[in-house]
Image 1 (cartoon, rainbow, N blue to C red):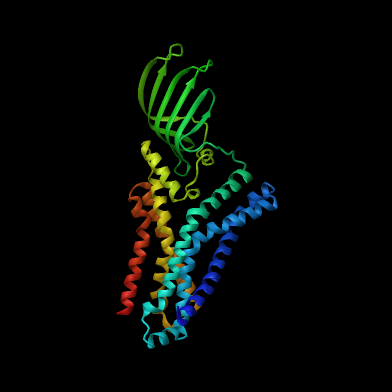
Image 2 (image 1 turned 90 degrees about the horizontal axis):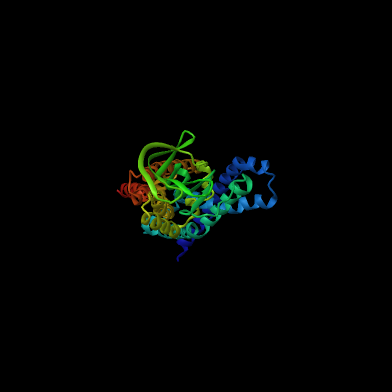
Length: 360
């Protein structure tokens, strides 16, 4: 590594640490003040405050790192361009790619580091945060039953749910067993899918089977459409019993998808999030690449305020577009892999076009 690359990397790392610290601090401060009411209402102890901060930081870093890399690249190259240092390097025969190659390699390493954090550290921290905020502070009962084995009793009925998706307010594979006072089966309801609408569960289709309590023989079976269901639970009640997607890494999501697919359930949301586990770390590399033409095109007229504003604007557009396309993926309008990678590819093509236009 020559002197120029060491100089560029040291400049880049200093700004990256500053921007990342600023983003994490602002995010953590806003998030804490949003939740401070829960801490005060439940008289949280110092250990719970400390747990909140320690578990929040890795999760926040994973979310804001691409924006920090973009701002760092814009500020680094923008500052060097404003002081004519980039011009001096190019006048010495160095190509633009040679100048930024070390920064791009570092951005690739940052992407790899984020991939490791997303796979091993962030899911654990998210699980600890959900346990702290939902169970310890809000007092929600913790169900230890995993997905596919949700069983509970409700006024003479035994209810089994194969898949609960509280985010979508949807349940799949519901079986309701109604018993008489001698605990003998008298009726069974089988519901493929139920959704929560207007404070109640609704099934587009269900199968009702009636049994003779003495012999256990099937007496009647019929299919009914557009039926209301009384399950004695709201979508929020199932949230603590179901691992949230941000609590699972790529391998866990993959196993969950295989299980749900084998059982005939819709695993679209899990597929989108699984591909997203691989796509999101490479956002750092793409943002670094995108920041190069934006930084160098402004030349000597650049300023720190403009660089910060430009970076924030690009980041806001990216995350809005990403949220929109992910929503299409969750709904099934786009294939999961397309929904996860589309925004990265769009911004990569924009960066390539700007680079070619700048060179021209």
